[in-house]
Length: 184
Image (cartoon, rainbow, N blue to C red; front, side, top):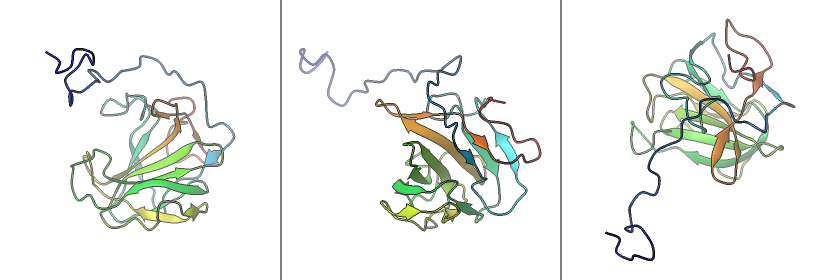
């Protein structure tokens, strides 16, 4: 029974019952004008999960994300210039955040590039800092909900209700990495 019937819920109760799963992409906005260079140095590395992946890329935040397996300590670089909007740098394991350590960069078109699962203490930028294409953001790691060292890279926009992943393209092919704008 609610503490206050006018509220209709008990304070502290979760208001989100189920996370929506989309059966088809609903993306009215696409990062079409920019092609992204690979956001890492080194390689070649292996794609372990792409858009709509069976492990964790089904929700609106990560539908078009990619996971690239790479050794811990691989330099992660800005795929586009922008301003650091948010970051985490102190997580050492799987908890408290499934994203682990990350950097979110706001681009000139209001999209953001998000680089997740970075090594603890490796983030080399600060919130509000301007970064250039190719600036080192941090080092790859295995923090958050991760099944091995990798970079989780996603381009998102703010829908007004939260972050939504959007299709994007890389500016070069790499041994079968998919064209993410086509969802392959």
